Amino acid sequence: MNDTTAIKLDVCGICCPLPLIQLSHAVRPLKAGQIIEVTGDDPVFETSVRDFCQAHRHHLLDVKTGERCRVTMTVRVGGLNDAGTANTRRN
Image (tube, rainbow, N blue to C red; front, side):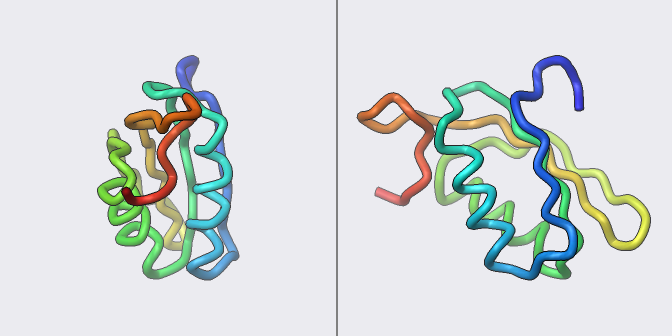
């Protein structure tokens, strides 16, 4: 985690869709431009997070693959909804 990362979320050992549910909850209070780093090991984790980012207008900044199929993805929160918090639902 670097100085600009707002949250570091570890969802290893959890099967989809639960990692995406946790990611969605973690992103909600963040403001556009803030960074979240999420690590998971589910076989569909990387694809699911990519789809989540595209659907909710977040920006995937980096993907790193580690030991034991662990994938760490760095995401910059995208646009805001009317409440001033991060978009977590498709319009």
